Length: 190
Picture 1 (tube, rainbow, N blue to C red):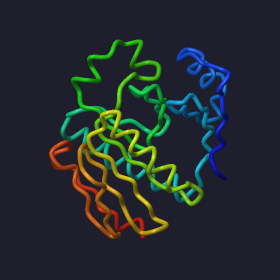
Picture 2 (cartoon, rainbow, N blue to C red):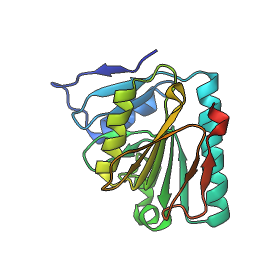
Picture 3 (spheres, helix red, strand yellow):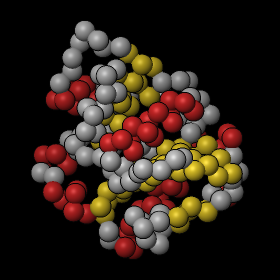
Picture 4 (cartoon, rainbow, N blue to C red):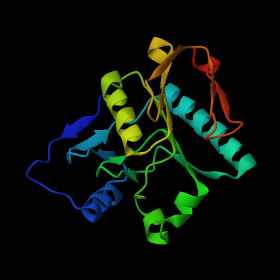
């Protein structure tokens, strides 16, 4: 099942209205583009859900050991500077920017771009749509992003000010200077 995109050209949802829409329909996962289009994300299957959980676990364990920031699941909606509301499959934010948000901002959809994101392509995800989303993250200030594509046995690495690096699986990914000591072996995704 592919995401359903609703064009809301003549309807403008305020941030509070979008938040309430999400709260009143918790069985759905919504995103909103910078143009105001409402995207209803389908649930993922068992394999994708398991892989996503493993990614979050690995990132979370590293973060607990280093205590350098905060880890977020795909249920978290981030309000990006361009007005889009996006939910990466896994995300991480350094301590200082997160703690600079008010309690209200942290409780709702935080108005901040994560420092690091992971998107895992499921069997039904459109690759070009995910690539667009990755560039949107980078444009919003995300410093490092991984688009894991098991269908083509590749991972795309997105960095600020650089071209996309494509690696074939299996591979070992590094959190580089942003997430010191964090590495992820993608051999289980074969």
